[in-house]
Image (tube, rainbow, N blue to C red):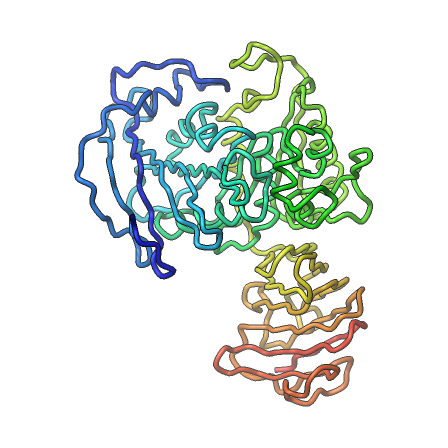
Length: 508
């Protein structure tokens, strides 16, 4: 048994599969539309190709990661279905996740790019009742398409630690911790272009892809630049309403029946249990997708009628928010699923080359200059570090950043709710600390807030609140407006003791 240490992440490299070797059979895959002359079974072999025997050996892959290599296939030099000179290796790996105490199984395609050349990454989310191989092996040609473009592909199984299974997760917080850990492992070990990470998912996986994008808005840890959602379950509570057969595992996953916080944080939109309509004032996690284009696809005759409705409601919500970008593509022509021969609920609607052509146009921009944050946990959101007064519920605020002249150089943090602390960096938002800047804020729940601004090379000459000078000092306790400067960190710390409107002026 391998030792699992808090200081050493252990990875078992279970299977390393070759890309095509000449002469392999090319049976039809189980559903999905193949690219001309390309099938994933052609690319990966079925079963297993001809791996070379190797004595298991330990490979050092990074400062904090050790991989165990058990077998590897020799990549073919003349794969007839791939662009000459382009090819790579597909792996299946298992990674222990300390945060959940479980192993996350995932497949990873590594292109043969020159060493150190950053490449785009597709993160694929599988549907209900199947595994990660649904995306990377059986039912799509996205791995073949990525191979032609020299992109990486990651397909996590999304283990649900509550149920100890990967075939039912619905964006639960625990399953997303596993995906987060695996994604950050990949970012640490391979040259991924952080501005071109894309999420793609179908059915349960479509909802998971949108949910993951909405809950992970920090570029350094793998924020998605765009999302493709194929008939996704973007509201787990609505799934509960329409799928009595899986209510027991859903309730085990989310701690009971809806409505409750765990369902809301896992969904992109918050729907009424009575009629599936958007809840006015609901907690819609898609709020966080400012600057992230989302495409949603569905067949007009998909038998999962409530998922079609969820797609419509997602479009309704995102189209109503000027800062969000959503495109709904409804296929009106009846097309049978290749796996059944009948119209149905399957991957076939997506044409992989067209999807990747669209994704190739998308790139992560700098943190949006305006938008809303709905935080389900303490982390970074669109350039802001956020901590809540009370856990197990949402923290929320609206923001606008105005870099530029001394008359318009600052940040507005309005409609705060359950926000204990907000941090941001002047350089990340292109604010000119040398000009001085302002922070305007108020809370709808009347709560105080601590604000920490980094990137200052010198202490302010003075700090004013609503045009009144504030004495330096951050030790006087609650109820006092205060500020202090940390020269070691280059940060100014502001304590706003009320929820009423306040304008803080930081003067160089």
